[in-house]
Length: 284
Image (cartoon, rainbow, N blue to C red; front, side, top):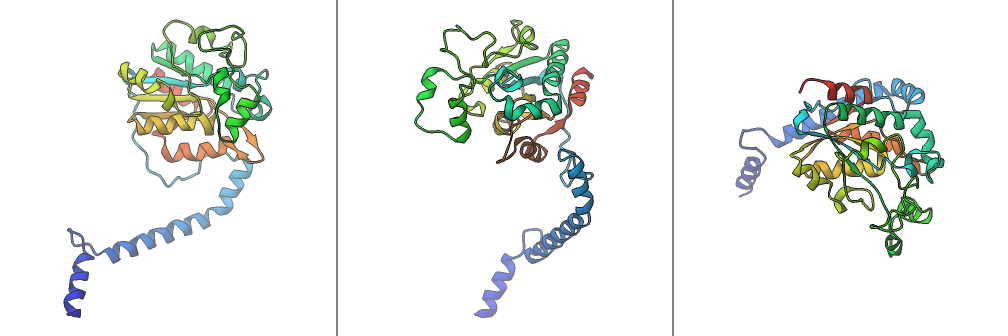
């Protein structure tokens, strides 16, 4: 009886192709050991690179290329929160995001993306962030939600009244206003926390027959990453432009570094602004 049980167990441990599960486990252990050995070997060099530039890509990544190819007829530039409160020294968050914005040249890089998209007649979509007086009546929120409400970030007088909106923290950066307000750019309803689940971004993209997104804007580990994740879940291909975003640097952590790691893990492509502009200028 024991022999029969052992034989049955032995059969279960083989897949339909005859591969023994224990062999697979052994193989996995071997691969893991090899990766660990490689990581150990490169620790000193990696530490030196991180000290010189904590945002530098690894010399040799472990993840495969996705094969992402931009199809101009199916692609849109999506910019999250290109607003004064995030990108201007006049904005309420400049004290925590300003150094990152300046380091990456974020304001100018977003402008370069807009210029390239408009020159190519590519669909441009803005996903803005607004808070109305009633939003301040929410009963709960995360730490950053609490902070945003407390400092009046992205505040507007109402959804139907633009009194005081012009040049306020919720307004678009003056560098971008001509392009955003050209009558062709799609301006979505506002997102309210970080991702686009509460606005009409996915609908607008689908109605324009868009399934590829070039993603930029503010801020890296919050709205950009949240938009990336939701768009991927909705079946879009997404290329993130890594120097057309920035993030807060706080004792709790460097938001840009946190986002960059996840961009490398999950985005279909991770480009510099130079690379993104070249792709947009390329052949249709």
